[in-house]
Length: 444
Ligand code: HEM
Image 1: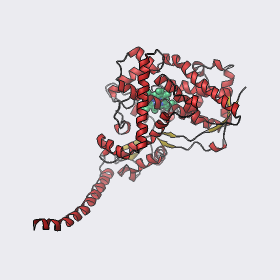
Image 2 (image 1 turned 30 degrees about the horizontal axis):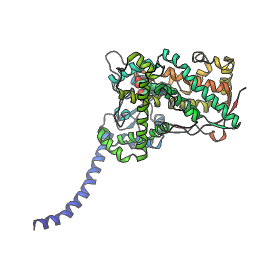
Image 3 (image 1 turned 90 degrees about the vertical axis):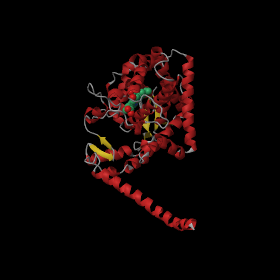
């Protein structure tokens, strides 16, 4: 009898639950929207209503790969401060960058970085995502590898790879005078080989093989994965609970990507181990760090995670800048001519080109500054500013000047028809750059 009553009640109870749960969820959702719109501490800041109530517009722009354009457009419509998501503001005004990232007055601590953006899924700490104290310790240790003295010692290493690039280009043109060079690839191969040599004590052989190393390919495709991680973190609750995030990622990430991530991790760990075993006094990252600090400054895990970081921070950045600058030069022939004239009239032989002398070329430096949009007025700072600003700004400039100068000293460049509208790209943490085809004519 009792169980009969239970069975009779069950369907209506289940029906009730099926009805009540969506209703409750809808109520919670509407209440959240209302809170975000009318009671949230950021309610008075301008921006679209959809962004004020929900993370969806920001997340969708990130997933589409046009987050940067979307935010620029919002600033044009709403002004210098825009509410881009319920809990997020974007600032574009003069001085905002300095206020947020700059050194603080005595007694005030630097703002901590947002873990929702910077935390890695595996929780590894490196110089970029480390908290205040870890960051200060790591920055002090790595400063030895990016000092002016280090740069001077590293110059022959840079030259080896840049000269290999020039040699490869000349050889390709001997084979086929009309060869089309994908300049994005050329800059990537050179920068990855240089950083590989600095970080692992040996290059990745990309210039030798004229192809991407599988590890680099895995790394480049992992940027998109980073966007998925950020999207998952914008989901209610999950963004605050790392273990839930890990669980969800394990279900969502395709097996192929998981395999690539394992490859990425093992590869760099083995390379760092091999380099450290050599106890070499080369002026690469570890030679310079160990010379000053011994093995005490960092744990082995921190050495691995920072090696990974350098391979990202020191490659795509400079290669992207050089790609953009190349495009603007080949589409503005008078500017390209002016730069080429400056380079060829300064150096009567290629062996005279040195990182020291390149600092004094005004038009070369103006071109780099313009590409970085370092106009003081805009308040924008491409290398960031303050205690967490780029540790390697000087090295980046030296490297970019050297690579571009050597290529323009040796070749005349011309854009191929199919790359005329190259400049519009999607952004998945880094710019997703299609090939930038150019024809090169060797200068005798
Ligand atoms: C055009 C080239 C480059 C640009 C525009 C650039 C830009 C930046 C920016 C904006 C940051 C701050 C990142 C953040 O806080 O989220 C940064 C940090 C950093 N960059 Fe660069 N970078 C460039 C080249 C390089 C190179 C060649 C290296 C060499 C490994 C490098 C190493 C680093 C390191 C180690 C940090 C972390 C500094 C810290 O947190 O104390 N960067 N860079």
